Length: 81
Image 1 (tube, one colour):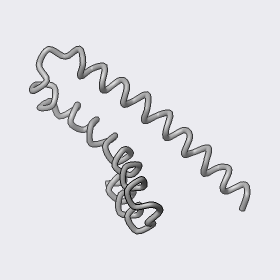
Image 2 (tube, helix red, strand yellow; image 1 turned 30 degrees about the vertical axis):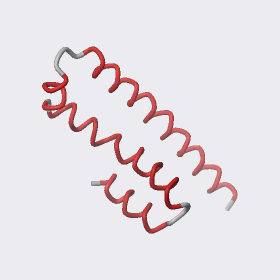
Image 3 (cartoon, one colour; image 1 turned 135 degrees about the vertical axis):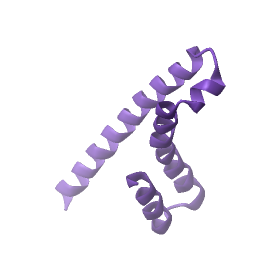
């Protein structure tokens, strides 16, 4: 339905903005940290990285494969877990 499509695009926009803000915050923390090695060894930072990578991976795979729905389903499942 048209309403369902509009809601989907709103949620997509919210996701894009949220991931952009979260990514900027992550990159700023990385930029100002004195030890990059300690930064990535910190479990909290690792979890943050794992939280944002699937978003970019999904976008990257969409560009590479066109609109292969099976690939996106797998990436979305990975994002859930």
